[in-house]
Length: 269
Image (cartoon, rainbow, N blue to C red; front, side, top):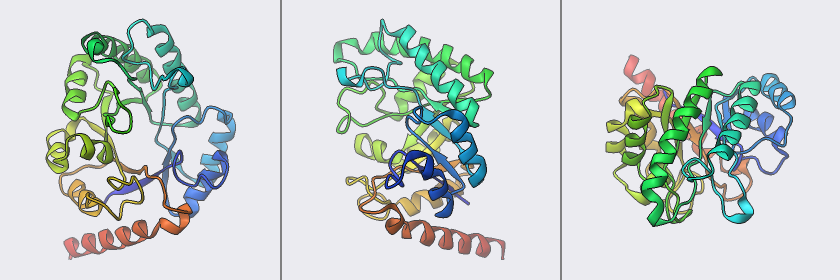
């Protein structure tokens, strides 16, 4: 049965980051993920996770110079040393808090730099994967849509699969965000099935609003059921922007959990 994690970059933002862990646990989440939690000391974050009995799944590498337009460094030629510093920060912090994965952000590139960007990303990911392996962690790469982030280097699932093949490390996986992939490509269930062995994490949100996964053009409940049928045993991350207070929009989670439990009991019977 699908397991859901709360992305604390978007959910429970009504309270400070360190308090979001307990808020997620109270709401019924057994796992969380974060974008850039580095301002919270690792010891405090680990204590919050342990106290709430919540698993930390993953975090992102720092974006670089956000004021200059950076949104990741992994595919940027000439920024390799900065990228590895970002990887070191993410892996060290992640290992200290018990995280299982680090999302290595590719960055924004111009059309004429795509070929060089791919070579750079492959080389950088090889080093990042080896460093993450030392900490027992997985490296995730995520295709991000060009409507929300124009020029983001990694933007299609097949592109991610090709890069993983070139890297040749078993601990590099796809973070399959249904929101981004629906906008860029669609055909979600076929892509999920075709790349199941390469998928390390799945995320959901409504399209086009990126609100709770109970509206819009994706039947996210069906996606959860489909993932269950094809044998996906990872977590599904709730990475959406709530329409209001986070707690007020969690009806989808209660309804899905009840439906999935009923289906599981029916299958056993």
